[in-house]
Length: 235
Length: 236
Image 1 (spheres, each protein chain N blue to C red):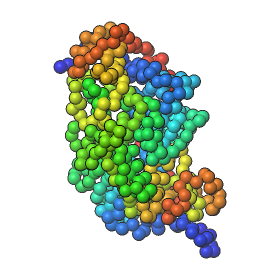
Image 2 (image 1 turned 180 degrees about the vertical axis):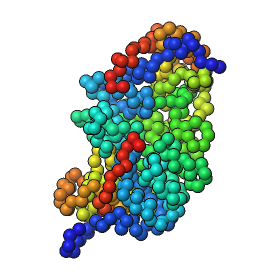
Image 3 (image 1 turned 120 degrees about the vertical axis):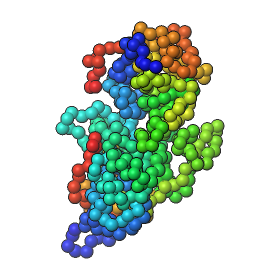
Image 4 (image 1 turned 90 degrees about the vertical axis):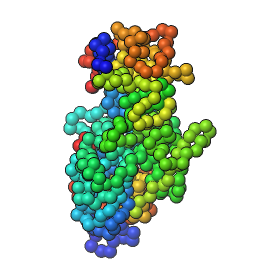
C-alpha cells in the first residue's frame, strides 16, 4: 500500500481478514471455483476465523478434503449448500455432516446454476431452460412448451456477497482470469451487491489493457492479494 | 442371474470401447467427454482430424495431459485433471460454457451411463438412496449437445440389465441417447426403436437380445466389434 492517500476508487484491502470482516450471519455467499481452480482460498481461510454463521453457500461442489469450504462445514457455519455436485468421494466432510442432518442441500444442474447466477447479475428475474425436464430437477417447477419442446422456469439466484478469485486485478477492481480459473467467478462477480476478489497480483489502473479486462471494475468492491496458494486440483 | 461366461469372454475392454466410439466422431467436431471411458476416447482421435475437445469448466481445445512436473494447475478439465491447450484453443467462464452446451454448439457429448431406456432415456447421475453422486454438468450436456453417445457395460456386475424398457434410476434427460456403446454391442436409437448395429466378435444378435429388456431391431448387416491388445492405446 502506498504511504500517501490511495488513489480515488482504490479497492485494495490490506488482507483477507479485513476484506471479509463485515460479513453478517445468514449471508448468502456466492463462492467461485471449480475443482480447486479459481477458488478464493485465502478468503475462505479468513471465513474460518470469522464468527459469521447460518451461511448459505452457492458453489459448484461440496468442497474437498479437510481444507477450504470443508473447514466451514466442520465449524457448523453453513446452514445450506446450493451446488451442482454434492457427493464426490473427495467431499467426505460434507457427506458426514449431511448424513448427520446438520446441513440443507439443494443440488441443481451446473448450467442452470451458472445461468441463474448470470440472470441475477443481468437483471433477469427468471428464464426457461430445457435442462432437467423429466428429471428430479423439474420437481415443483413450472414447465412450459416452446416450439414443441418443454422447458422449466428457473429463477435468478443472487447472493448477498460474492467471494471470488481472479489472476490479476488493478486497484479499481478490473479482473483478469487465467486458464480454466474463470469458471463461476465472472458471473458471481455481477450477482451480489458486495463482491470480494482474491487475486495473485495487483497492478495500477491502465496496466491491464481495456480490451483484456474479463470482469469490469463496476462489479468488484474489494480486492485482496492472496497470501498463500495451496488448494489445487486432483485432491 | 450370474454373469454369462460367453458374454464375459467376448466383452471389449474399456480401451476397445473408446476406440470404437472415436470412429463415430467426424472430423472437425466439437466434443465433450465425460469421465471414465469417455475421457479415453481422446486417445484414439488423431490430431489431424481437427476435433476440438471441450470441457464444461471452460475450455474448447483441451489437449493431452502434460508431462509430470509440467502441469499448469490453472488449466484442468471437468474431471479435475491437468490438461494442455491445443493451438486454437479458447477459454471462457461457466455462463459462456453452458450457453455453448445448451445452445447446441457442441456436436457430441460422450457420457457414461448407468441405465439407458428403449427410447434413449439416460440415467447417469445417481442411484436411488441418499448421498450418492451429483448432477454436475450431465443434465445440461445430455439435453444440449446435438448428439449424445452413451457408454456402459451391458450388464451390472451381478448380471442385472442396464438397457431397459424404462430406467429405474433417476433420469439425467429423456430420449436423448443417439448411440450406445457397450462392452458387447453398438446400438443406435432410431424412430422405430433401438437398432443393433454391431456385436462383439463371437456373439450373435440373440446373445445381445437375451441381456436387453427392449426388443432390439437388427441391422440388415451386423458389424463386428473387435478387440485389440491394450498396448495399442496411446497415452492410456
